[in-house]
Length: 550
Image (cartoon, rainbow, N blue to C red):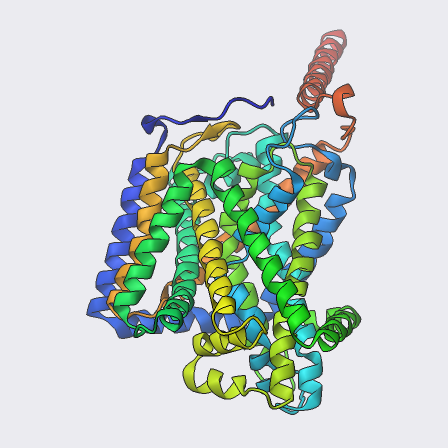
């Protein structure tokens, strides 16, 4: 598959009925919320309870995914270059990593890097005493685990089958239903394919709407802190509108000039913030705690990863680890579509290791520095973030931690607010591309979605949290619904891996990764032609034997 000049699809290339259906479903949910809010809450609670009852499954899939992904990365399959042996990456490795990092971790992760330890020390696992020295000692290690290898592996759950289907088998399929139908090799009913495609869109939309809903209050708090304005719904609405303008403007520039540049800017802001926090804060404690926590995480990796807590029943696994994984499941569908878009010219090994090594290292540094500074101030009586968190919520506590990072009450809040804005904008921009592609009938390399379609999805992404905020609804309801619909994604994803195993077995004889000496397309074609010839020769021989017997 050769790289072609980027061009936009035409309007007739889209299935507009899917857009209309999604809008209708969203309107119906809003009306339902107005008419019967208790029923909505009951369904959300049922979905959450169902997930908690399947804690063992949610814990096992990421662990298995880490092992399987690494096995693929260091197998011959890992050498396959997406787009063909001579394909050249569209983006530098740094840009590629930055886009994955910013799109794969929403604004909630940034906030949790300051406050995750607050939850852990108050509700530690393994029967530890709350607020004890031991609970502080393991808190950062638990954060490193929960936002490290396992969580990042979920980004690959659909991405690897999707990319193998699209780039290796050269199938024009980039939606859940289309990929399932293609990989299954069965006559799947058209209505079932469409249902899966709609679920794919709904899960992407639900997860990203929650990202916007979670990030907006923090951005609003920064604005109010800097301007002295009252934190009201009006300010929230203004912030959402401004955010919509930013990520819509970025979407109009395309990935190369939009998402890529936003991601680079965001990473430099993050570097500046973390370096300043490290140098101006308790440097020795921060570095010691990062190294110590990394060792604890590695030493107790499987103990933490399989902790369903059946004896102490502290609820830690269900309230902390399960939250991390459910939050990540909301990104699974979006990341699959996004990786297809930006991974042209990359090998499977590069894609996998970017997710399983590069991203976790960045997360560990962010949690290590931000969390350690807050923990140090708390333990030494310089601040009481736990009380602020319990009495005023995560937003107020996050702002207070940021103000105590050594950069002063203004500069720190400004950088933090800018990071939040760009994190949200980057995720939403990438999501608009994925959603636009999800309504395209056929996806091809170099064929970028129309801006008009991306604009429609940008508006939808902004309007949903805007309306729900004006109604006073909690956005966790939408997240709970996204988690409920995520179950089909999980189940179908497991089937995709079964189908992928079959394809890998069929392609086992192919030699991967020899650059220009090997053309994957021609070799697959030669293999198929050889199998056809052998079958025809066997049938001819059988016919001759039958004639001879007569």
